[in-house]
Length: 501
Image (tube, rainbow, N blue to C red; front, side, top):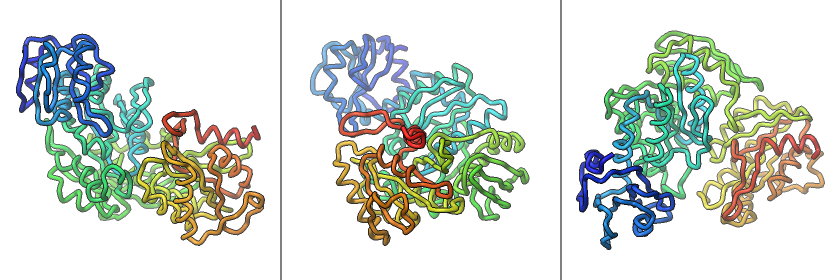
């Protein structure tokens, strides 16, 4: 694409260079520059792309987009913009010929439930004969092809490329998990969502947002601009969440409400849950429908309601929605039952916030005949305030708590564990020694910083009436210690421990 054509997508810029230049690719990472590329210098969270303008030119960049230029940078064309990240989004949409306009784009935001809701939607769309692509926390995928996701919502350039690839391969719908980071940074600013879903709002990411209000305002961005695009959008909002009414009030698009209150647009009754899944009757504007799902607990009923509302708003028949819900057997690392040789009930869940841990425990408690054993840790280099809160939550709602390491990153794992322990102690649980763990009948907590050994001990402690919740990492198959990653999968650790290996 010619530089002049590309720049037609920018509302505000100053050009010093040749508009007739042929631009082969767009790039925001100077390490990946190839001959003929346009490099966009972004001020990132830890690095400033403006420091790599010379590197980009040396590697073959023929045009530069930046918020300031301190040198001539050779013969490269220079495009001065007030916001380079915003410019990247618009340039990417232009370069990939606005792929979002060619699919039904569904965005899901909220602290918890995004991934599960995306899987349910994918299953429903497939059952209806559509061809859905998904961009999310676990991976980005379309009809058997997938790639791992380094972040929940990619940078705008990567998003546009992904959606263009999916569309060119035949995608009709694209379901996207939209993180607060992405919204705050404008990664989805040029994605005209057809439907936006709000799952819930609780504490998370305060290491980035600094306050709950800033965190909420980032989430709210998805709904404030929903009316933009070729068609007016639809907002699907959980009104059982305290922030639901606030979101509905700021949204100028059509609003569909869901929750367990019968007065809402989408609700449910006749609910029953056990270890094999749930059954309920959905109450919708299109009628009532009995559903059966392999997903565990009332917490997943909210995700089902969200997906049902979004699907109906796009014209999907209620019978196909019921079929899609039934087809989905599990979501990786989301209330996932792990089969094992000892036939113990072990659930691996991604719960890494106080509210998510509480909801997981509230979901599993009614399914537990014996003790509820909760094993968890907290990530390093992240919101430290939630460690104490998660400790209290675990202690109040478990019979046995095992405090261990999560992804310590650059922090001392022992220090993280001590901060969690303060919360567990405040809940009233007393510390016990591992020598009595197998026969522990009184509520207590144990510490094992090594997650491998902690899972081993949890499995050795449990009997068939107990339920073991391993929380925090979910689908992740790695552990981040210091600057590096090592292979680590909670589910495989459970299987190995149960086999005695």
